[in-house]
Image (cartoon, rainbow, N blue to C red; front, side, top):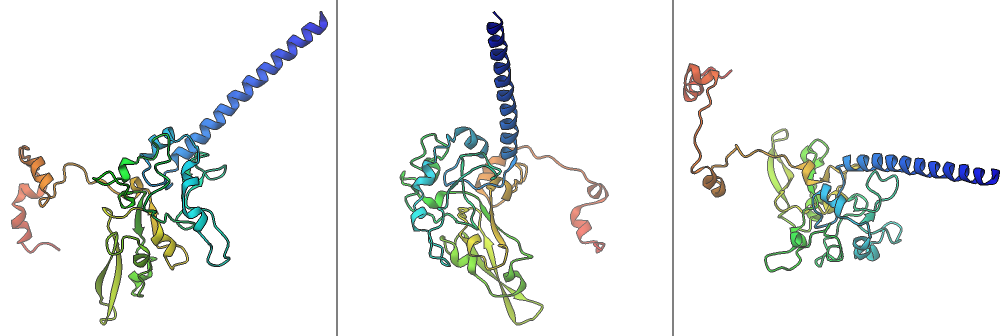
Length: 276
């Protein structure tokens, strides 16, 4: 009888320990999930849906990383050894949800494969094939919007007056995603600034410009679109935009009264000479 009671106690104790460990594991995983979801600075493969939905849809199968073509062809020019492919699968310590694909341009950028092999193999819809397809239904890597390249003017040597077009030359959409604008160098009076300008309607976020940047820490870098882009708001209207014209055609005009308008017209103020 005593043996039966001991076995029962051991069983109850083991069960309680298991329940406790399960609960603790759930709390730890929940905390980890919250941490990685809060990390917005992550670049996903071409065709990735909105990050919040991506984390729910991705089944962490790794098929996209396996399909990444440059995994076999990416050779380190210094050592001659094969490097990891563009797409990595997050592991512990990456501060991202374990098992989800991502890439780091300074390590290995996206090489813009024309057939985008990483997208069609996705079985869960986390990578949306339609978002990287043209009107004919053909895969088109140029439709990808993995992120947006941003130039930090203070550290970009082109803005110092030093001639550099490394990012421009590295861009696969040469003269489209990044253009060079010429500006007179007023300090010297005889030199020209050759400034890289990124166009967000074309930039795919591949990161080839970031990998090519000559500065010690890249002065041009790719950020997720949600981080890199601002939103003006619907109440701002571009007078030259046909869609905006149609949107406000029947809108009711509202007058905003300011202290300036109480005292006189804006035109009168601008012509008064009291601007300083």
